[in-house]
Amino acid sequence: MAYHLDIADPVISSESPWEDDTTAVPQAHEAEWAKLSSDFTNSGYREGITAGKEDALQEGFDAGFAEVGVPLGQELGLLRGLASALQSFLAPMPPTSVVASSRAEGEGIGSFV
Image (cartoon, rainbow, N blue to C red; front, side):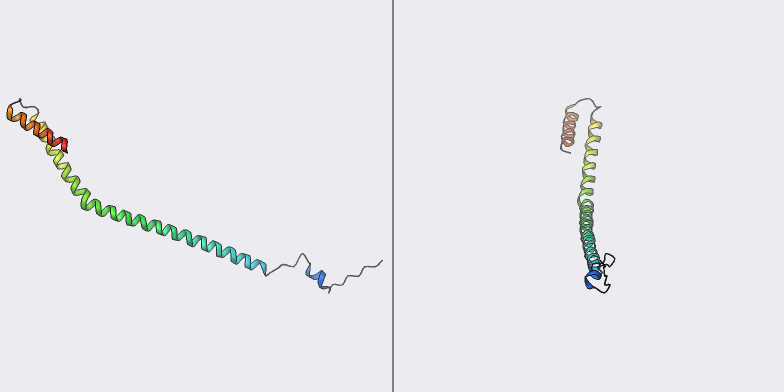
């Protein structure tokens, strides 16, 4: 029995394992590239939004602290210092009616501050 191999036979040539399907590979790479590009774009957008929110929040905090927090803190510190100084000044003195009333007034101021 003799076998005849026809090289020009289209069935044999189309089933060759060495031939690459060049049309499927570029589409897969393009799809992968599009997905990666989309993922990085979305990630960058989210990071930009987060950074913008943090910057705006920090600016608002700085402005509020400078306009309200610092002056209020300075006044409060001054009042507490005055109350403490008055209390320590009046403490060693002998109790008299004027000194006792001043001392009570100084302690009252210290409790509010």
